[in-house]
Amino acid sequence: GTGSGLGSYLLERLKDRFPKKISMTYSVFPNHASAQSDVVVQPYNSVLTLKHLARDADGVVVIDNTALDRICADRLGLESFSFGQVNSLVATVMAASTNTLRFPEYMNNDLVGILAGLVPTQRCHFLMTGYTPLTFNSAEPGGSAPVSQVQKTSVLDVMRRLLQPNNMMVSLPSREGAYLSILNIIQGEVDPTQIHKSLQRIRERRLATFIPWGPASIQVALSRRSPYLPSPHRVSGLLLANHTGMHSLFARFVGQFDKLRKRNAFLENYRKEPMFADGLEEFDDARETVVDVMREYKAAEKMGFG
Image 1 (spheres, rainbow, N blue to C red):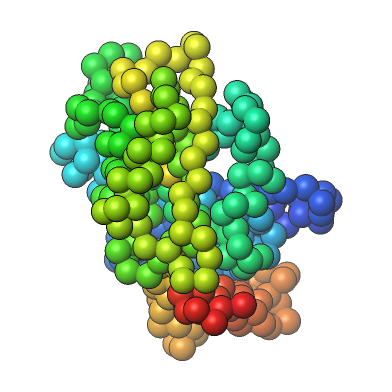
Image 2: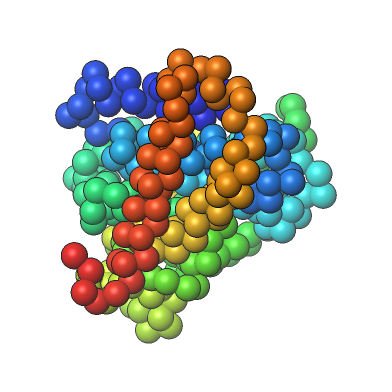
């Protein structure tokens, strides 16, 4: 609870102090199975934090530990992996998503430009992400042999792999539901005509299903690479997407929360804190906020949304 509690507190204070500033968080969600957690009150902490992420952030890049472990095991073929290697996946996404801010072009060169095309409503600002090709050093520390399971890095291959569920860093059914928006940030030596051809192939193959009431298009931002960090791949890509399947993630946390709340289990330590001394209304308010977000994502799948 230290990370989620401190992060929520900082986010709330920043929102109060700088209400007109755009804020974007990279939030690592816990493993799905509560049995895998060392903290029995994890469902409480998750829902309490989700309230602040829903109210105080303008964009939330959702990453979960279950997906990170799966990528290390399945995509990178690692039988065992360290916290440093898992954290390097998160760092890769953070660096790639801010690449257009550090090496600005004529589009997507600030947070407003990035989020404007991804967030259709105030509540629906939770984004899924994916990156390809993933590489990091196989030995720690000082390892120099890069680990990668990807051979082809043409523009089409990169954009096609970005839409594959096993490359997503959040575990939700992306084959179900629909995309509200997609932004691909492509790095490397890319001819714009390759982008147009790749988008045409993706459209022909119907690799992405969009909501019926909005534009069915993939935004693409071309970005330069840092001259100080050589890459073994000619082209790499990051996906930032808003997907209605995000409601299933919230439903999972609410379900775990309700199991504990119905029994009033493990609430003693919360009651010792000043903010919960007069009652546990904060728990109910947080749950209602998460349910509202969940309902809005579910409603966004229908034609009459809005």
